[in-house]
Length: 465
Image (cartoon, rainbow, N blue to C red; front, side):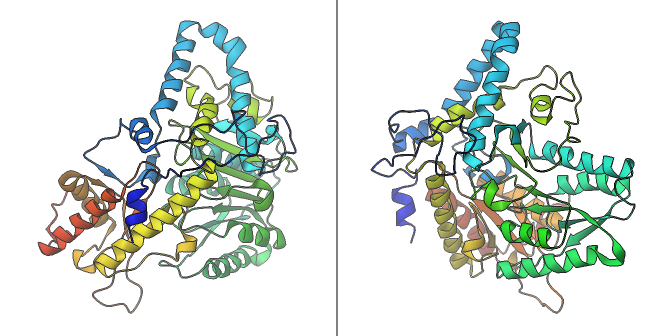
């Protein structure tokens, strides 16, 4: 089972695959025209190259949690450091002559990768949380200016990221909006379950003549992690007359297929530091050109206010913009894997499913969703005898695994459903796979849990902090 992963843990394949080129300035380039920096395919990475690129990782830790903070290779960190030094050496020259052209270069690469129509549709911001604030801020202004009525609705998933939920509370609810959360089953058996619940929630939102002003849809939920059928949900929103659709894809680019024309949302954001190898922190926000974006502004107001979101976001005062500027170097890194980002995504998905299946077989449990609903992360059921009975237990078990076993992995508590008795799996680990991982990382996790089980450990024995 694991031999294929063990023998090729750096995801290097023997023969390079030619990447389709295309002018970065071509606003109508298709997704097949992947941007590249070489006239000829670059040399592919060897296993030792990968070890060198991530040699700054702690070798004592099985780091199977790429989903939380991502990773950045040494070559990109070196490029970032050079940019920082260029700024410090002569900041005026860098500001007047280099900063904006470099940001436009990064935006153009992102535009091509996500299959947007125009570079003007792509803004670079520091985090997907900032992107959410930009979208929600203009909704709040809609209430303040009388465009929306008190009680108009927003629909979002129950498993939406916590920071985005807080943003909805801060901007939408406080402005007078009514929020409907879509309950999602977990474990989930099929995408149809999600589609059904979403339709029902939208119809609840439209009761009593309410207008649904916004739908917030995750592309990949964080905890528990599941790939959401985002194209289908966007289509339903159009059918039901939802004003605007915002896709929160913090785990999008580099992890799942990201194509703006196919998805069809008004707004789409993704971090670049999670699965796209950028240093923290940087994200993009796509704003569909046909959408009325005149009220979209960066929440930090500076000299560029009123010049369009992309320009506003490119200068919000003196700060370190180097993470925005290394996208070309990241592309160079990615193109040294066969198939580029598409090849990395495919292999990460295959390997994380393989490792997840190895773990549930060892523990007699199950995955949290079918393999086709996994990205580069998967939820793995933990043995019921561990006695995970609260969010606190899940956090303390995670700390125990880190401190005593050198395993970094998030733990999720899912309360038993009505009627379920003892022996039910209530704890799941979210494992990630990225190019630096190897099979030993997952064996280390398996063996740590097995040792806890053999020692009759339960979460009730953990100290109360």
